[in-house]
Image (cartoon, rainbow, N blue to C red; front, side):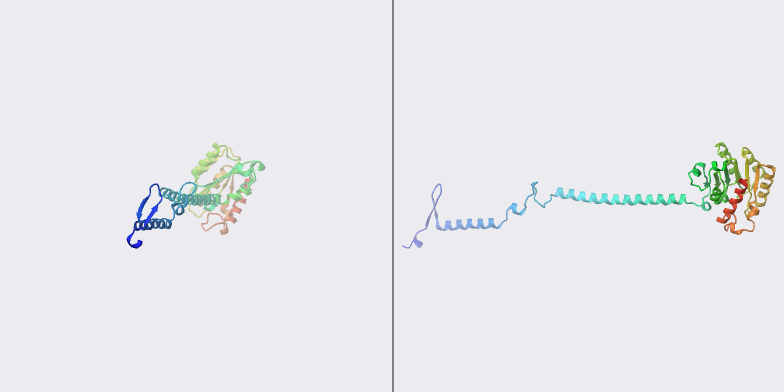
Length: 295
């Protein structure tokens, strides 16, 4: 009888124990083994799919917690940078604002000074050379000046033309009564010069009683130089009469600068209001006063 038809092929499998397996079972087992091997070979190993870094983490991978922390750090960094940039811009803007404000204050001209502002020069500033004028020691005496915005506009020329001018207390819209208070304060502080220049009356009436009060406050001065008014106001004539009469009552001590007569017929000395001085007018005004102070 043919072996293939009548007998089952027998195979011996080595092992601790020998076991007979039918030919068909052996074929199925072999196929199963080969299939498992094929599947195993077709899958890449975990190590080849995710190579690990030296820290034990898979290279290039980020855990969810790490990813969230990194994202928060990036956002925080961007926010900090934006805030820092904005702060620098704001600081720079404030500095620029402060610089512009400081430049405006330092460069405010006498004719544009706000009401209540004062042009004041001290002897220390003159010695430092900041005013362009001479020092009190060079002149041998000190000079003080009190007035309104007309004097304020000519203050630089006065400092240049009058040696020893230590204080120019010129205030916009100054009336006579407040001016007397300024003179009293200068006297109390020991800052009155031996020569005092007074120009008042442009902003209101000037009475004989006020004139005498000024002379009482300045009783210790050697000379008081009064400047009369050139102002297109109803009180111009009466104020000039008070000043002229007052000077006559204090001969040898009070002297008159007749600004009204000197400026008559010279519109070029004034701006459009007919009161405040152009540069040319300020020069003439200052020289007239200096001539009386220095004689």
